Image (cartoon, rainbow, N blue to C red):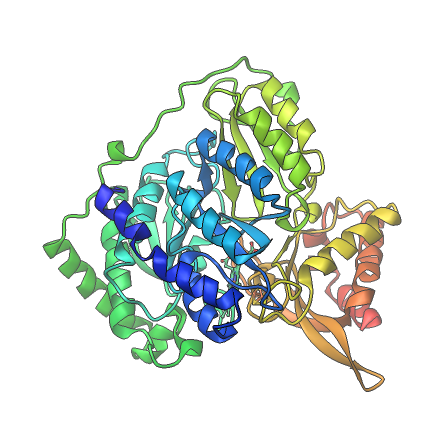
Length: 517
Ligand code: HEM
Ligand code: SF4
């Protein structure tokens, strides 16, 4: 629970952040020093070191009506022009000066948005976006996701871990929290219990999580969180940041079995000495609103909730960057509605939930720049125009691809979702895309040229998780044409989508890639 004591703690070291931010933007502090410290406050400097970003963390991506009102007010007050929905279910505002970053940090705090620990080596959790509203779900995981989120806020002050620690918790139907390949993940089973996976993750040395526990009672998840944090604190690599993530730990501990043994021993000890059983009623909230059922409203973006007559609307702008005018219009309308919520989805979208059919129609209309098929739901990291360590402009590539295909009038309905990262770090999750790209350089006529490595055959879907393999290196300017050619082939083939076509046309696909290399 977020007690007053915890709240006080979450703001207590703000003066440190203020001091370093003033120094950095006055050029009295180095880029490296600031980068190492500012992340803890949810902020990083951007390329050029004259601007920075402000990351706002919401519990499982959940924005209440009050949060939405505050967001709309802040967009207007500070003229925020670059609002990004992140795969970590955060909001990220880019292109800010130091004073704006500091003001937003304090104002967020005053509105119950706690950004302490929203970056840096602090633990974070991503939760299924449709929790509590999915007609298929058998258990609402909201209380457990919320309990974990709040527990992490508190634990970050007590346990020092070597590096980032990303967690995921899902409702058994939705792969986007990546529970099976996070530092720690909870995957809901058919029996309304959780299977637990540890030491997974994408980026360098990608790993699928090791199953460490089956059929865990939902009330007991915090014991696992605490145990894993302790194992990481005791056995993680504090000396070499490049090898500090949990996915390196089992090998360093003598293998998966040795790791599991330590995990189980630590878990037993935590269970003995701590009282961390969750009382779901402490975190649950009820949706009492209902509406008149009108399924004619359903389409690619609007879907039915399990609550009678309620619907949710997906707003997925290109690359997760909101059209600020549209977002404002939707927020202004949404805050007038009963029990409305917005949730940031781990695939860079914003969902408005608890809407009647008419309300859903209206929100969809106000945000009609949204993706309407999977290809337009492609994911990309922010890229090198903003990110200091990026190699190429991943976000720019995605937008160039969209523009080209639009101009050519190409039907993109059979193309898959792309996953694009500006460098091999995989913030754009290229390793788990059916088609992924990561920024690279290619020598063309002996000149280094902007290019992207094509990664083939990744999957984020539970049960068929796979990290893709490098299949080509294509100059950035040729990639839109490559996708045009691929779309044309798909549109002439009987297969319903890229995935099924690729299964039977592997050689043809590889030849196509080669033709553009
Ligand atoms: C200062 C440098 C970095 C910044 C500012 C940064 C920022 C981000 C952001 C904003 C996201 C969410 C993606 C989005 O929705 O836009 C992300 C995701 C991610 N980042 Fe980074 N990142 C940095 C460095 C790294 C490094 C060095 C690694 C790996 C060694 C890494 C690995 C990842 C991965 C794997 C994800 C995706 C997680 C998932 O969806 O499961 N990042 N990063
Ligand atoms: S993948 Fe590379 S370019 Fe993209 S945000 Fe991560 S570090 Fe930056």
